[in-house]
Length: 265
Image (cartoon, rainbow, N blue to C red; front, side, top):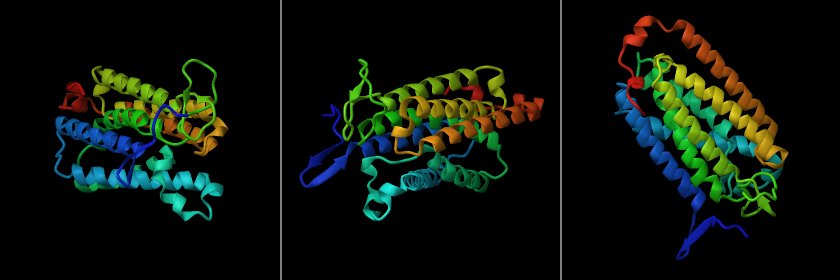
C-alpha cells in the first residue's frame, strides 16, 4: 500500500494530487522566471501570455510523446489519452514542442533582444520549477517509482508491487543541485557570457536525465526508455554546440553590458 495518496475527495469531486503538484510548480516557475527576466532588463508585460503558451505546448507535446511511445496501451482507448492523473508526461516530448513555440514567440514579443540572454534568464528558473515539479507531481502519481529495490530508501507507490527506487525525489534533488550550480556559474566571470548558463544547463540536465533513465528506470518504465536516453544525450550534445558557439562568438563588449548575471538568482 502506498504511503502517498494519489487523490482526495471533497463530496462527489475527486482531486488528483499529481495535477495540483504540477500546477504549484508551474506557478512558482512563472513567478521566478518573470523576476529573472525583469532583472535582466526584459519587458515582462507579454510574459503571462508567453508562459501560458509554453505550458500548454509543453503539456500537449509531453502527453502526445507518452501516448506514442506506449501506443499498445492507449490504442483503442481514447479515454485514457486524457487521464493525466494516472501519470504519463514525457519530458522530451514537452521540450520538443515547447522549445520551437518559445523561440518563435520570443522573437515575436521581444524583437531585437538577445535570445541567448533571454534563455539564460529562463533556464535556471525552468530547472528550479522542474525540481519542485518532480517532488510535487510524479511523487504522487500512479506508477511513480523506479526499479524494485530492497534497500532502506525504497518507497511504495500506488500501482506498483514492492518497494521502488524513489526516482521523483532523486530527480528533484538532482535538479535542485543543478539549479544551485547554475547560480554559482552565474556569479563567475565566465557566467557573464551570454549563452553559458543555457549551454551548461542543457549539457548537465541532458546527461543526468539519460543516466537516470538508464540506471533507475530502464525498460521497466512506460516512457520510451531508449528514446529518453537518446534524447538526453542529444540535448547534451546540443548544449555543447551552444556553449562552444557562444564562447567563441561573444564579443568583449557583451561582457560590459548590464546583465542578469550580475544579480543573484
